[in-house]
Image 1 (cartoon, rainbow, N blue to C red):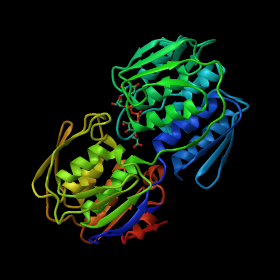
Image 2: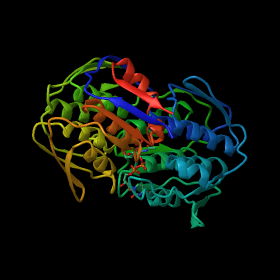
Image 3: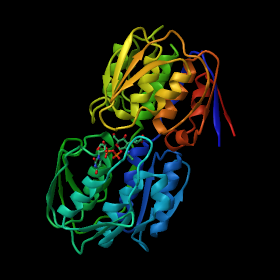
Length: 416
Ligand code: EPZ
């Protein structure tokens, strides 16, 4: 298993380009199931999860060609409607083939994702929505099995604004008979990106990005030629990397509008952030000021940035309360940061972080994607050497992070 070694205490300076958004690329790739023909999707990040989704789609019968940052998908033939456990257990987002498979073939059998490090990750809202559209859904031997001769538009209310639930139901509804309304839908930018990709295929969708989305079913769709939006979580991660090392980083090929909550919170801690139309410049403070944060659905502070922000607060002046409202077990990085000398106490869904002047390098272990990013960020600021184990978590969501950090002056290397 690869490890990453970081020599901390170096201020980062320079320019870094943001890759395409993983959590937009995955649903947009799944949307290629909805029509035949040859799809082209560009600005695709080079990540393990993208390769996994590509393998799953070719298992279903699509011809998949992953070139540099572009993927071509030939979807004339769907030869299977089953997403086996082997794929789903490595990537929960495999559940995103459920809606499009059902809409295209009338049947879909997708393994229940199973839990992951950060929580149980239920899919009850996905299956509730499909039943509302007229599908017959059964759960047996660890699989969701959905069947429907024809899907009919319906009004679907989500108890919780689920991101992939909204995406699955949007994709199921675009070929349904009549109008579908999604209420209390998720508002993330990745939802807007999927809607725009579907609209480019001929779908009729209004309101994506708001909590009320209206979809009018069409009889058929045509292949897409679509460019994915930049990754807002990678953007936020590099903002924190600049802030925590008291450096100056220019972040390019991104969209500052997608990271409002993160920009505002980092400014409160003393970071100086100036905006361009596709770029940001972050200048770190000598020492960050402790500030509280609560994770919320978009446009609130993103749960995917909670661990990275906590890394910054471990060396802040004062005490910060960090509350995780989205997932039930997303503090796995706390124990690892404690090994680096952080003073953190978790009570329920709130972590109390008392800032220390410096973290100390130590051997630590990554547990999930964003926790692994937070350990890299913490290691950049720590005195001495940190070795992070199980970096395959990192490779799922960050394209060449050690190379990007090295161009910014970080002393970082991968140990295979
Ligand atoms: C998406 O996961 C992202 N993944 C996650 O990013 C992200 O953390 C999450 O949204 C929240 O923003 C992808 O887009 C591939 P949810 P998702 O459904 O859709 C509950 C990363 O780091 N819920 O919005 O699985 C659920 O338990 C990943 O890239 C139900 O109760 O998250 C959670 O508490 C990690 N029933 C809340 O909703 C359901 O049927 C939000 O989950 C579905 C969800």
